[in-house]
Image (cartoon, rainbow, N blue to C red; front, side, top):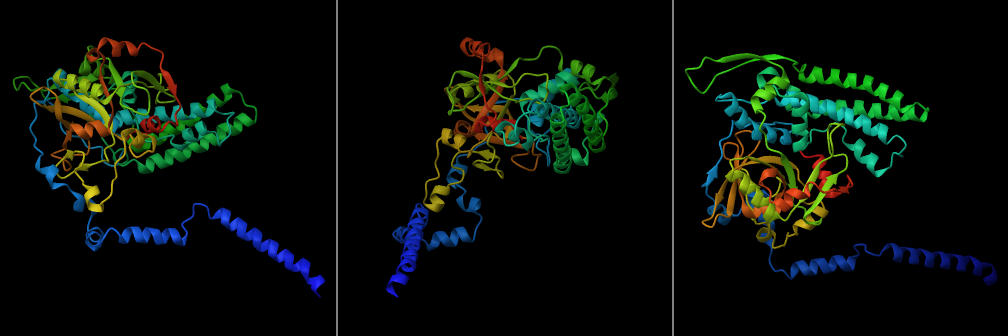
Length: 473
């Protein structure tokens, strides 16, 4: 009996030992009971924390953490405030980059036309932006037609073929190609102010087209044949956009009142390009992009792969500078009466009721007795901070020595948020959360200006900082 049972017993013992060994290996790094007991012990050693539990569990965390000491030091004084136009509202759309561009150009147009009020038609530019994005997406599908679907680059391309996001040069390139029209010539629609559904439908259509183009390639169709099919596809996208935005005007009549009451209202016939030429004139700054990205070398020129909406335009080139230098150029621009388009992480440390961007306006450390600090470089690398919103600097408050103390920001969220649509951004918030600005190249010192003549370092589209720029909204 013993001899017949021994192999069976040994087999069981070996299996149990193997399970124990496997379980031990799998347990590496797991939350075992001894570790959980240690967490409880650490918690108990902090003393009575019931007051924290009561406060946090029963209240809004932001309201609970609002730093009254920081609010008490706030004022609305400004050393310089530029003239602006009416506050705009992007509503439920991701067009902040476009509305910020409008806010930069509108005051000049008001001056050129000598009118009291004016708004550029954002739906007109959005229509063509969407057309160009659809075309660019399909061109990228043709370009990458030999790549596997799990290719990192192709995955990013397919992820967002028709989003609202954009960048300063998207705005200026659209104006250069399609001109401008006043809002009265192409007003907002339900879909232009709430873009979720049209974006979903167009994205579905474009992804279906992408699948078709790749199948045609696998059937040995030539690149010319793919592009001919692409033209038919874009005709569908055009029709879909007309249904949602209305047809973009090729010509229109525009009537406006002069600020001089003795002058009769002007009533003229325009094309989008003739209106652009009259409204903006011929003397416009050469704008350049400056960033503050501490994860990359400073005083270097970078170019982001596939960072455009028009196929025929170049990718975005940016000069990376220390934050103090970027801030200095913004100050020079304001003192030169130039508004500044900039982008930042708007979700960090902002108090809407008073229109304040300030580090420490919420004191979460005191609420939770815990440190939440990170360096700016770590925030960027680990996607804690991204350039996700564009606004316009319209003023600055300086110290007696001429250094910036806080900034006036014009937003595109309507007049019910902030202080009638404006925000006050403190210098410490600028340092931590402002990530790029567009400034007149004429304001740069010679060394920085010459850097834009150098060959830029190409940056892959999946870099965390630069990937966020592709989807700025």
